[in-house]
Length: 217
Ligand code: GAR
Image (cartoon, rainbow, N blue to C red; front, side, top):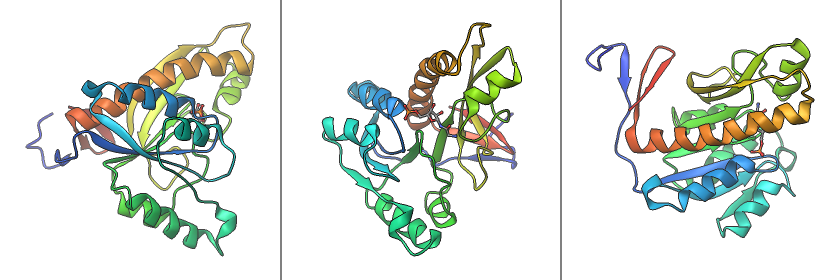
């Protein structure tokens, strides 16, 4: 594969140093915490400039406040319809001029205006080996199916549910004795490490795409 191939789109390398991350959360925010911790090291090359949630009272927003990172909450219920919420999310996130938007357990589908505004710069982490077990119950669905291996996937967000181009995957074994919570815990250890590594590499090294294939560096 060569970047002279017209099917391959080189992504622009110009970005802020450190790269500006906006992280979106709906829950506990353990992936966010891993990013916040890694951003303390200057070599990592990234900084979390804002954390947003779609609901009040999330652990993720608490973690951001403790780290003195600006936060916002943008609830669908506060708008007349989904389009207006999409506009509000887009305007709010744009104010922080992100190089990358990281959806880390954000449990709402991002709207078309948002995805256009931050075209190709929105990633998500999901707790299964996509395309298997998309949605919000990845670990339980994997356990119930009886797979021997599952894992976590980082991908570029597109309008579908967990359907975007895959950037990185990590494999986690399923044990006979697993419950949903033991499996989830094992997946999340690997997921956090993968997310931190992938975000850092995307921002430091850039990436190219060829169809659905994403190449870091
Ligand atoms: C993560 O395991 C992530 O994969 C999952 O939510 C969890 C959030 O954990 N996301 C999805 O299922 C989206 N399809 P966290 O709030 O502790 O980072």
